[in-house]
Image 1 (cartoon, rainbow, N blue to C red):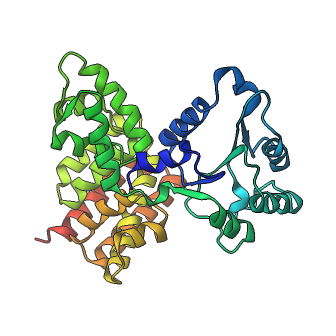
Image 2 (image 1 turned 180 degrees about the horizontal axis):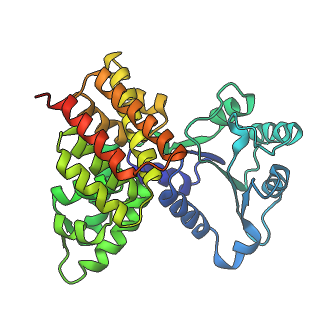
Length: 342
């Protein structure tokens, strides 16, 4: 089932209760927009309501869900940030309110569509409320969307907007946005404006319009290191410092990248699949995919050593007046020796 088909399940209103799991700002906004359109404009003030549980009580939202529509046939009630479905301590829903929701789930109001957003990677399946909600609700799980589904959606979206995108340009776009659909869609709007008179999206266009984030720049730096291209790595590091990036922040991101490479390498040798790794490590599957491409170039010991060296550099950056660029140069040279022993 495609992303659009999943979202269409909500707007079809075939069920009274819907549960949206996972964070996807693009589709969340589309769902809310489409839900609101289901209520006539003259009735929206009275018959469409959205409650953020970080600011409003669950009880208030439930009272609204139980109310009959005013001057209309249908009411839509949206509940956002349902942290009570997780193991998070910050949940503000009281036991009495959760008990009240359980009763509502067993006897929902026919004239009300209740949509609950749980923008989290994982719900606490041990909780009675989570079990009952999954049983009674139609579920749309954005955490289950694969990179392939996201890629297919982007291609279809671009085509529907009467643009063309070259395969290499699509790859570069996905790479620069880390296969994050919300980020990709935001960047696409800028690309469309840039290509307004010539609706063909090329790699050059993506390179010109879609800027690299700091994480992406550090990822490029990691790639230089992984390939043993020491001169390029050092030169690029100097460029980032000259652009005003903080050495300790660069080192922290480098540390995180090598930690992920090490973790993926360990899990890979245990026979874990890409989707399993993403779940265990709580990172986007696309990051795991990239790590799998690179970790095989090194032994576990080489990755472990590089990671520990970066931790040591962090300590020096925090506790001494050592030259950050010199510290990185030494790290890059040591790494190069490990990769290309002479």
